[in-house]
Each structure stands twice: as structure tokens, then as C-alpha cells.
Length: 113
Image (tube, rainbow, N blue to C red; front, side):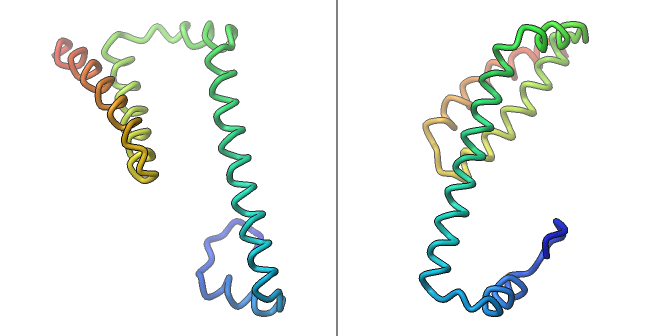
């Protein structure tokens, strides 16, 4: 079960039952899982912050010589992905901000046509 293949809920429950961890053990496991997920999200946020501030990365990115329309398409894809994530997490304030930015990007894309 540790080779990154998808496993069913039944397989997971069978494995847990084999371990005989009990309710208290399951609660501790759940806490550890949630804690690890929060740490991963924090690391992702930190990486995004550092990545945006990294001068070397931005210089390499500028070497692509993307057109305004190409930049807008990339921004639109990113915004749609973020919108889906925020909707799943029910973070509607962030969705509103994304929607406003998406309107700006759509103007750029319409101008290019």
C-alpha cells in the first residue's frame, strides 16, 4: 500500500483493522494526517512567496518573451485553477477577488482577438 498506487477505502479500513489501533489510535492518526496536510499547505504558501520574490527566477521567466495574449492565457489558467480550489474550500471572498482579476484578463484576451 505504500507504492503510491490508488487504494480503496475498504483496503485502508482493512489495513487499519489489521493493526488493531482502536478509536484512540485512529483519532491520533487523524490528527497527524491533518497536521501534516497543514504543514504541506504552509510550505506551499512559503514556496510561492519565495518564488515570487526570487529575482533569478523572474529573470529566467522574462527570457521567454511571451506576448501579452500568452501571458493572459497563462494567467487565466492559473486563475481558473485557483477558483476551483477556493470554491471547494468554500473561500468565497477569495473567489470574488479571483473573479475581478479574471475580468481584467478577459479584457486583455478580447482585445487580442
